[in-house]
Structure formats: C-alpha cells, structure tokens
Image (tube, rainbow, N blue to C red):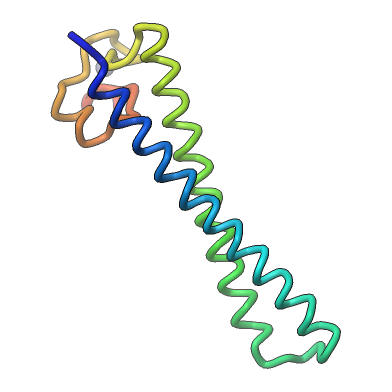
Length: 112
Ligand SMILES: [Zn+2]
C-alpha cells in the first residue's frame, strides 16, 4: 500500500494549519498593539474587555493549531518510518476510512 495520498493530504493539512496559525498570530499581534495603544490613552477603555475576550479566543485557537501541526508532523514522521496507518496499541492496520476521516490518528477505532 502506498502512503503517497496520505502524505499529500497531511501536507495539505499542514499548509492549512500553518496559514491559520500565521493569521491567528497576526490577529494577536494587532490586538496586542491595539491594547498597548488603548492603555496609554485610558486604562478603563470600554473596548478593553472585548479585546481581552477576542485575544483569549485567538490565543486558544493558536494552541489548537499548534497541537494540530504537531499531530500532522508526527503522522508525517510515521510515514517516513513506515509506521503510518498502524495502530500504536495493537499494531493492526487502521482502516482506510478512518485514516481518511482522521489522517493524523495513530489508533484504530477500538483503541482511539
Ligand atoms: Zn488498535
């Protein structure tokens, strides 16, 4: 069985996550800059709370995306090792349908 389609899918996922991560980082930078400006004007800026909420959402999104990137990289490493598509617990092949739905998984359905 060739892992080429899986690798292509993972690389596409990786590019997507990286682009989203970059966008989230830019939003956080913009908010940080906006907050710094706001603080010099008025500590009790009514927008301060909103910015804080958006900031924590963007920060949480960034954590999720970093996690996803790590999972994609781990899956790519398993492809390189020839261990991709094999359950890390029981060593049985992971069904193609499951790999299609969750390309970064290293567990069969039973051990998910
Ligand atoms: Zn298993």
